[in-house]
Image 1 (cartoon, one colour):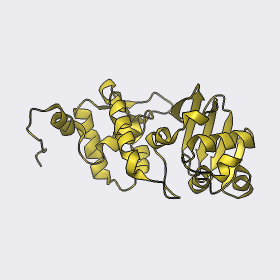
Image 2 (cartoon, rainbow, N blue to C red):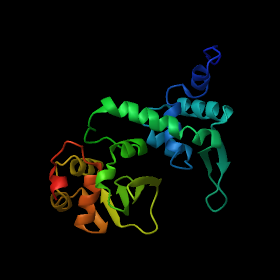
Image 3 (cartoon, rainbow, N blue to C red):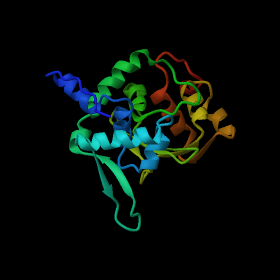
Length: 220
């Protein structure tokens, strides 16, 4: 099947020729977190068919956005990563996130937050320096490093975390939205504090709480 093109001498149209297909930018979004295996990408993008994922990866490779590489032993697995051209799309994704965030509303209880959603919700005015490692049920790990009001997100564990939290997504959502206090969240089955204090957990909740919420978490 022939690949569709806009056939317009326009940088916007040219960019969309390269990364405008459905799922393409979400694949790029996932690879902003670092090298990922094919199965990692499939798990992170529920609803994408295996044929679509394979086709999008081939197209992005051909466009110079993504490359395949094989990790050395003992891993010896093939992973996908962004090229320099691919990483240059970070500013594009941040702008899209800011624009989309204006009308996106609050997350549903079971929603998994992307890195860009985390940055969109971050409140520098409430920032507390530290490294906050979140281990989601199911194996996904995200580390949030806060320094001088600036947030950096890393896919994976931190070497020196201030806080390590093992949590069900629904319970983290309830804490951040102010439906649970740190104490009540920890009293249930959906959250365990492995490193750090209740005060650290309250600080984490405040940094991502809704701006208009007199939340239980914000009051902790």
